[in-house]
Structures are given as structure tokens and as C-alpha cells.
Length: 339
Image (cartoon, rainbow, N blue to C red):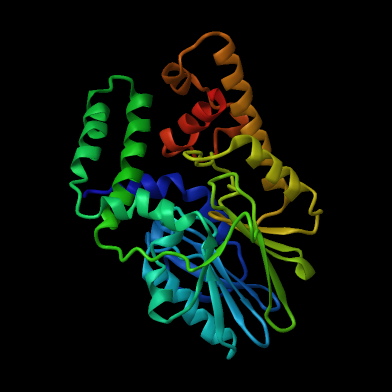
């Protein structure tokens, strides 16, 4: 399938430029760079304009006795980068890798971990959702999903609507293009209602893995309490409208409020974009409140959902935020709030 790479690169230029101010990298593969954040903690920052292999951020937590890897990424080569970087920073064994949630850009590279017999930690609902959303589509003609959206974009007369539909088409094509060629590999060590937290003492550094659903029903965060660092997955979006396809908007807002309570010293590694602080959390909260407020006004005015999705107006203070993939971000958020 023909993927509009230029459009994708343009959309993500802001976060990537910010990421380039990170510390000198331990490894730079173009599509991602691995840098030291603190003693025993390394961050992998994706750089999509130079390659789509990673798409999501990741990281390494290395102690005397064990190493923990974060994220499966979009393709196995990006997960293999985490394994390679771990071998450079520690001689300790890799005890586990983590998927912060089930979405394809965080899990389709899991095969690299399975090949090295590295256990994968994930939420208990992730395997079923991956099978339903991805594995079930293996061998299925994807054009039956793509063609209607492509035709809708070609027929759109409004330039803004056409642009939005082209963004939707790109992300759908990106996912469908990889399903058949990916050995979809599920997490094996599962957290959930009965086991919502797991603490790993790696030797001199401890990581706490917690289940906090909001962005999806499968979200995990990884806290390093002694260093004021947290890997948030997509529970935190940096200067970008969040993907809300299967979000619980009310629960999600509560998680962001929890992040604010972590204190001013906390450093957040979001699912996409650079390492950030509380300002990014406040931006995300403000963005969600604006979406909620506009959705509430439109519903009160009796505006139908489809029309409400189209009518949402991006405020001036958020005009530089990425809104690519309108249906999965703004459109899905309006729908969730309508419900």
C-alpha cells in the first residue's frame, strides 16, 4: 500500500525537533536514538521522519542483577535495538520486556523478544484485543476497509475535510500494511484486576509496573520511584491530540491528575515525543477539558454526533498540536464524550 510518508513526517516534526535536544545518544539508528537519562535508566526516543520502525518511545532500566526493557515498538528491528542497547549498558540478564498497551505501534515488534525468550509483561486483556483487532485480519483483503475511506477522501469538496480524511487513510494503511507480515506476539506475564501491580528489584534500582486504564483498557505505566521517572506509554501525549478510539475519558483525566500529584521533579517519558515534565501533563489536561467542553456544548445544542466531529474547532493555543488522524483523535474523543 502507498503510505504518505511526507504527510506523516510533517505531522510529527514538532515532537521530533524537541527530541533532538536530548543528551548525546548511546546509539542513534536514525529511526530512534537511545540516550542515558539517569544512572541505570536509558530512553529510546522514536524519530519517525527517519524511519517508521519504532514509532513509539521505549527504554531500558538496568540494575546490578537484571535489566527491564520497555515497549515492543512497531517492528522487530526496534525491539532488537532495545536488546542491543541493553547489552552495551549492562552484563546483567534481561528479565522482561513490557508492552505499555496493546496498540500495534507498541507491540508489533514483540517477535524480537520472543526469539530471545524474553518474557513480555502486558495487561491481561491485551492478548484478546490483539487477536480481535489484528490477528483476525491476517489474510483478509484489507482493500475492503481502505477503499471506502479512500473514495470518501477523493469525493470530499472541503479542503480541510479532505486533509483530515487523508490523515485517517494514512494511519489505517500503516496498520493494515503490517498485519500480514508481522508475527503477532502476545504478552506472556499478565497484570490486571487481580494483579494490578508488579515490583521488580533489579539490583540497586527498582521498577514498579502499575495498571491504570484510560487510553485503552490495557494501559501500564512503569515508575522508578527513587529517581522520579515514569514511563507513561500513551497515557500522556506530548503536544498532540490523543488517540481516543477505545478510551475511558473520565478515567484518563483522573490518571493525568494523578501524574500532577507526582511533584515538580518528576520526568515523564511519553509514548511519543521528548522527555517532559508537568507542563506536558497540564497541556494534555487542558486539551481534554477543551474537547469535553466543546462536545458538551454541541450535544446540548442537539447537534448530531457526525456533525459534532466535523465542527470541533481547534483553539489557537492548541493550533500547533498534532491533530493527524482526526477520526482516531478528535473524532473519537467527541464520540466518547457524547456517550
